[in-house]
Image 1: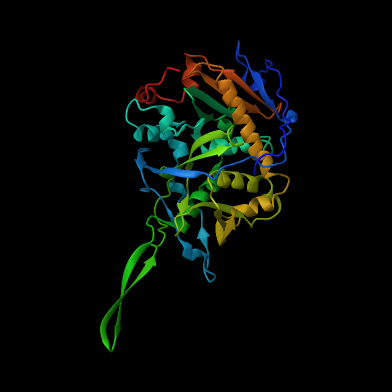
Image 2: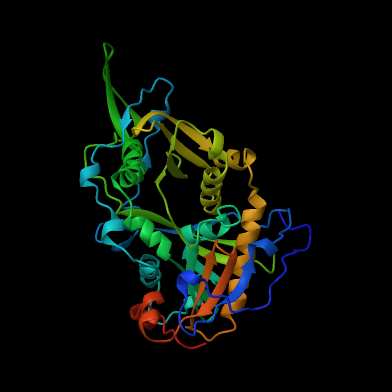
Amino acid sequence: MEHDGKRTMRPLPETNVVPKRRRLENEKMSTLMSLSEYFPPESFPLYKFPSPIAEYSVTKERNVVPGRAEAKYFYGKILEKDAAFHFDLNKGFEIFESKDDLLQDERLDILSKWLISRAAPNVGLSEVCFHADFVCYRGLLTRIASTPYDVMEDWIVGAVRIGSTIFLCEFRTEEKKLRQEMLDRRDKLMCYWGFKFEQYVTTDSPLVRRKKAFFFFWKEKQLSWSLYLTTPVTDQVVSNMKEFDVVMRTTLGNKGGGIRLLFSAETDCLDSEGHYLELKTQAYGMVSNFWKLKAMKWWIQSFLAGVQQIVVGIRDNKGVVRSVKRVKVAELCRRAVDWTPSRTFNFLLDVLTLIKSRMYEVHSLSYMLFEYNHANGKITFRHVPTEGDEFAQYRFLSDDFLKHFGAGAE
């Protein structure tokens, strides 16, 4: 749907706002937006159904290869009515291979490698990026869109413009780093459950044809063909070092003035018809508070990538799945409690529009940081120095990437 009314967001004058948690000498912070001053239209902004333009896999060594080498396929038989479940999600936890432990700060490296892989040297970057205004990961878009309701979750987004293309990269806040360091065994175990569930319900192979032979007294042999999936293998080491990603392009906002997006979405699996599926676990069913923040985040994540169904494993507090159900993404917003889909996507559109405006006020290859701080409910921005420790901390495009595309000039 398109907008029916005018936006009533009142832009604030630039001020020097320096949160205590990040006070730096001579650092200038200016306000981009204040949640208390944000009043979006009730209508949903135009969002073009995302078009998958490429698929790539990431190996255990974090190399990027085109295609579905690391794709997983949903084992549909688990949804049969007479299926019995006892998926113990705790199994294998002690030998889990987690990329969070090995790759603390991967930044935009994987997506950058894919962009390099699809273009010859000195080919125009804008063309390689399908003339997008923004290039990023889906998770970053989900984070921003969730902010009007997930108000306590701070975030930091770095941005750099090369010509007409703006690259975005999320960085961990100090609070997130601290929370990560303070995770106890139970916290880590619960994070593991989702990955183990994926192993229980997916296979490494797509549908294949199998030849069957039938013998009858009047015929020696008759052949037929059937489709089948290999059975999930659940005794192997669980690892999230490998992944399957889909690159998508879309437009957010009214025709002629919308924001063109190119983003990469890590994808859990495909169903028998080739549709992308999300896999989730949920304690004791989808009841009560689920329909608030959690349902919203599931919906934003799925809707951004055009995913229409989620397979949910219903577990107990001991990490045992007793039932599995398929949920339509549209149901998540129909049953929304205390949130509206239009507000999330209007907010995303407005934030991206303001970021784009700011990035065109600085030279190409200038880095800026955009930060949301729940303490004051504001999104602020500042310039990153062009050298020194802070530049090294927030720079996320490599020299190889810039050299490959001949970047540096307007």
